[in-house]
Amino acid sequence: MDSKQQQSFFTFDGDVGGTAGYTGVSVTSDASKAAKTASKYLNDSLLLNQLTERVYKLLLEDLRSQRERVGSYDSQRWL
Image (cartoon, rainbow, N blue to C red; front, side, top):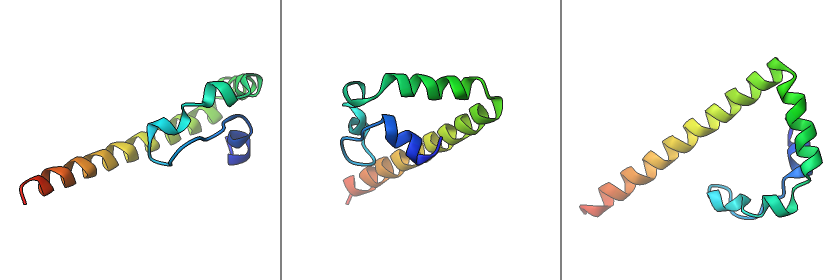
């Protein structure tokens, strides 16, 4: 899914690193566009594989970021 497709049915509402940024999605999303895109990905194994790889990479990046934050907190605590 390219950024134009994503932008067409997801309206971002918040800062980039927080999970609260997408709290308004259910109100501002176009369900028919989301369903059409989901169907497209489910019917094309290559697209689905690319999507899952991207999600996996984003999750790993998020975990790394969380570990860095926790590590920074722990080291500051003892200063």
